[in-house]
Amino acid sequence: MAVYTVLDPAELAAVLASFGLPPPDRVVPEPKGYVNTNHHVWAGGRRFFLKVAEGKSEADAAFEAEVQDFLHGARFPVPRLVRAAGGRPFAAAGGRLAMLFAYAPGEEITRDEAEPARCRLLGEQLGRLHDLAAGFQASRPNPYGPARVRASIGVRAASSAITPSNGASFTAR
Image 1 (cartoon, rainbow, N blue to C red):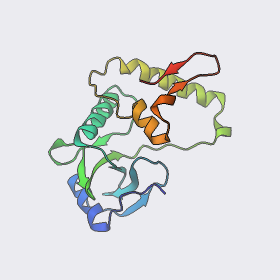
Image 2: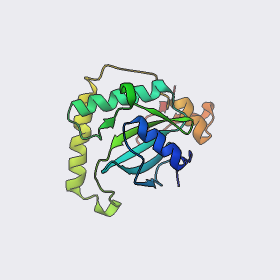
Image 3: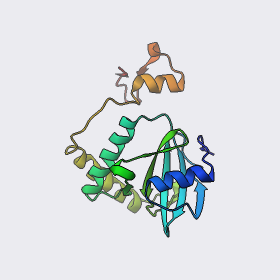
Image 4: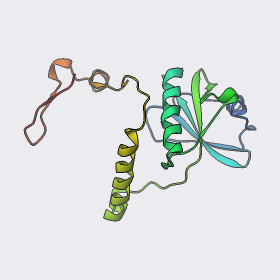
């Protein structure tokens, strides 16, 4: 299970209060993922998705919120970000930053269920996302650049050349 930051009931109630919500009626940890601690949360008669950002700064969370707001404003299908007190996109939780999103219904599918029609719809959305990206003006250095990826998979910088099956060579910088 990908739960790195354990929040007790009082901490969960406090973080939800930061978003103007009552204590949760129900909390279910999300076992999938490997970067953040995530929970499905039911409070005030609604369902939310609480993300505890592991190792992220306020600037990281603010940038993520800017991306989310931009896409939501463009009517791209992303969950709505719930703002904390003072309009901040995050609140403190367990010594970390937490972001709260309105629950976005959906379904996980298996590889066998990824038939051409679904893949076509996904491709259309990815194309739209690509088109929208041209209008997004904010920027920041990529925290997941080649150096971090190499370090995370244990590959030395000297062996960073990648040769795909077509023979082209790419070197991470």
